[in-house]
Image (tube, rainbow, N blue to C red; front, side, top):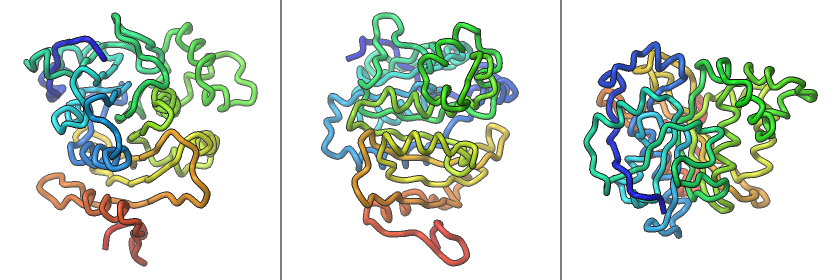
Length: 300
């Protein structure tokens, strides 16, 4: 259990004086509620035998806290067992501007989501969370401005950092490694055996040849249940049109002949449009495929 702490509802970063340029430099692109709900509905179905009164949830790059507040608001976990980390000190202003009471949580703290093992008296122990969820930063400054000591710690801690080069040499080389690659491993490390992960990532992690080692590393350690492609407009409010996807996994070896559900959503409920995500989830739960000749892996 985490200790009581004043919780804050997510607010628009502009209200806290954070510019779009600032968010872009940090790789921060806050997630639409429809995508968050899709992720949580999927995890709730995968973890349907879990106990929401004891479920421990963390987002190690929580931004405005959107994932965590939905977890609490929808009753998937209690406020005292939900925590979020983000290294951006400007977000503390946004958190504080929204007056949510101490009983409503979650516990949010300014801390390095890749390296923090505690904040205050709260432990961030690896392998201790039932759900690890979120949309980690990408396409921003990443590790370019990281302190040398932090780079050395990352080189020592993260296997994917070492696998990027057969002979890594100086940790300084890690400045060129996309930070989302490290968060893939961080999500896995924080998750308990038998727990579940929902993570928003650039589709290149699952498609580009140079990140094949990431996929091989991940698939040797998790059961990948599904990958849902998101439309380019998903994060247009943040000023980007990157192709992203929602990946759903369990921290357990995949059974023999396991099949991964792949789908692509063209509409996710933005601007009063149709939201295809609930229908895609129902197809996944029912073990159905999603394909048409014209638009493979999309709803007809």
